[in-house]
Length: 260
Length: 296
Image 1 (spheres, each protein chain N blue to C red):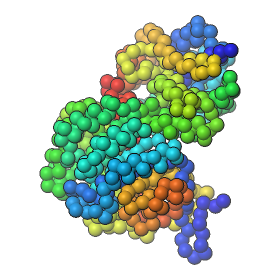
Image 2 (image 1 turned 180 degrees about the vertical axis):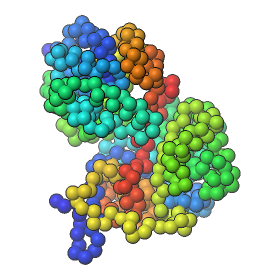
Image 3 (image 1 turned 90 degrees about the vertical axis):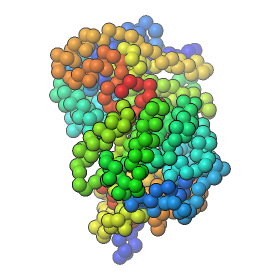
Image 4 (image 1 turned 60 degrees about the vertical axis):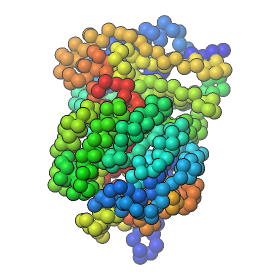
């Protein structure tokens, strides 16, 4: 019997995109759904997304952002070194940590970092960045097959599902195992399209992955971001679909596809 | 198990385990270079064959060894990699297996070479990164370290790479006389003026190795990890926890110590997977700065 999983992450306080993705998942009739973390940052009013996610009852992992907000750490631990990226990340983090309720922080602290399932005889590992580090970026063009095979071996998984980097991709490995990065729903995929990305994974003997782009009207969010005096560069990304900040970690191939 | 090795009276250094081989550094051009930079940490230069060029077959064998260990990415260095007559063929071979980065002084990048690189980049599903080194945002500064005319040629190389859409990464070394923020801004402005519209920059600390020891000084006694308490040692800070380097002379702990006593760990990669004793002054630089030679 086929099992259909919906996995998303990187909400980044974009409650408008979260709403659109909830609708899409419900319309598709997924059997199971998860969020692989990073609820806050970037967007406005972080408690709105946190409230929606908690009300949905969907299980969620603790991303590096949720860990930082939950523990009120000094920064988001995204690992930037470029001063411009660091300044934007800090501004966003300070805004988010100040506007997340104590109750949501307590909830975030208690979330698991990883989750293991067995579906159709396959060992499924859900994680945030990578199985070995919560804030590791797994970019498509920067991961050899052999490295991904090693991750599967080292972490006893046939299907690894992760997020964190914000760009969706999926790879079938020579061994038949699979790695899926679900991308992000809160920030467009740096391709000029205003869409929220997530992964629909159907396990039915084989593993079929559909990376879904859910189009939504981002203008209400952009207006909220402006009202909250969030950086104009962030608002531009929401309105245009192109990343304007936090570009330093992108490998050449992913960076080439963008505009900035 | 203690991370400290403690013979009774001698200083005890932390031992760095290899968590996983993420990066394989391939000193494809050995110590052969068209420049003789005043701070070169492996003292490369014209006619220097102390580490020989690696043949295409030799590189392929090292790549195969690393792939069997689950390597993530490859870095090509020297010397000057573009002095290697088979570099583009070697890159084509390796890009079939994983992401590649080439570290160059940028002075040998012709339109033909850059077109070949653009072709390789487009044909691979993995990223090809080209990193070009500068040592000043003005010709006089840079040429004082790297030789007359090298600034203009490197800048021309960067422009060619940018024109081909290759998004080169500029690599520079920190300096005592200018704050890092000011240094970054000056290089970013230089790149934009050279037509690099989407500049990428990596800033590295200075290593007191190779020819630099004659230009300024070597490491002094205080620049050491000796007797660092095991509880204070964080093995995640060091790139030698995730890399090894190969040259024609064997396998080394990292790209910085390929020409230093104690840096060699064996003839084959599978002989070089054990812990490394962090007794070199350069280990202190890596540890206190948290730097990595890798792109990320």
